[in-house]
Image (cartoon, rainbow, N blue to C red; front, side, top):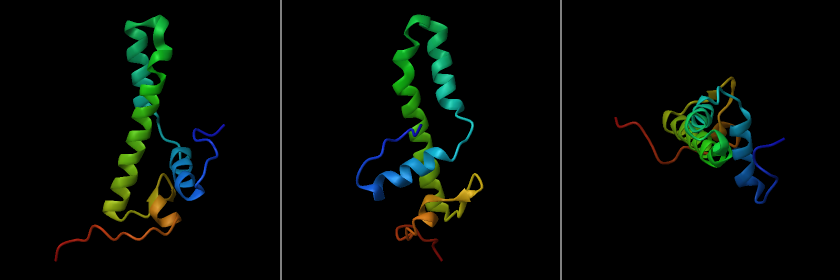
Length: 95
């Protein structure tokens, strides 16, 4: 099951689907769910969207870092800007 549904425009949603499928530890959402279960055992489902939001935001920061650093690989896979041939126009090293 994909974390991101099939939606249009594909050029927007495919990179999102790709970056979320790369894996990782997923420790941030696990800690969010664990923290909620410590205090509200019957309402853990209330923390599901915040936990997912933490993971999506964390992956965004990784994607942004890859662009800023010009990284070509992340988790043994091409970075989004390399896979989709997005040019890095905004940030350049100062001479």
